[in-house]
Amino acid sequence: MPSTELLIAFFATTAIFAYIPGPAMLYAAAQTMARGRWSGLTAALGIHLGGYVHVFAAAAGLSVLFHAVPTLYMAVKLVGALYLIWLGVLLFRKRVEGDMALPAIERKSARRAFFESIAVEVLNPKTAIFFMAFLPQFIDASAALPVWLQFVVLGTIVNLMFSSADIVCVFLAGAVIGRLRRSSRAQRLMQRAGGAVLVGLGVHVALQKS
Image 1: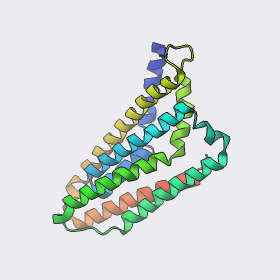
Image 2: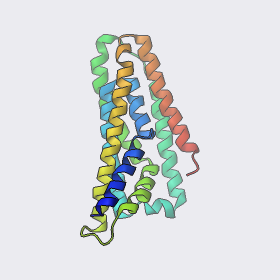
Image 3: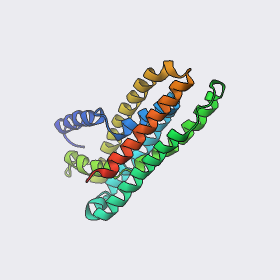
Image 4: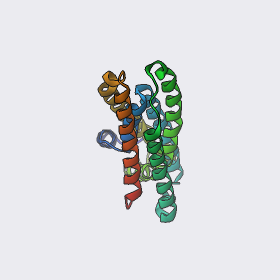
């Protein structure tokens, strides 16, 4: 494994990146605002699992393809952006049911949030580029562990730290809306706010040049 000094730098840098608000945190917060804390937590879990696709892709060198073939990068990027916008539009159009039906809605929404979040993370080429650009700085080619295994270990640590930030974001968003859940008007506003975040996030991703 890398030296102690390199590992300290790795953990410090990862923590800084993890707790700077980013797309995953906004997505988890949007799901919490629109569907409740449980949906936000399952969305965070889905993002975490989706992140492992990029961890293993980076370990296998797949992320290099996005650098070598810009057209492929743009295609995946636009697909992910359109998917976010579509999810946001669905939240805008979704009707708010009465309080008696909320538990069933939350369970259904949590399952949906879980699978949607996996797709959102897998379709995010920025995550792939991040892993490919960030992790090599802390890889020691002379270490006992092979390079690909170092990628997997360090990538897993990064994914766990980023997920911890997503969970913190979910609980903060849940604390804000917890007292508003009894009001159907408040539910509708929170749902539309969550939809607006997703649409805005999708537009932002689509318009980014890199």
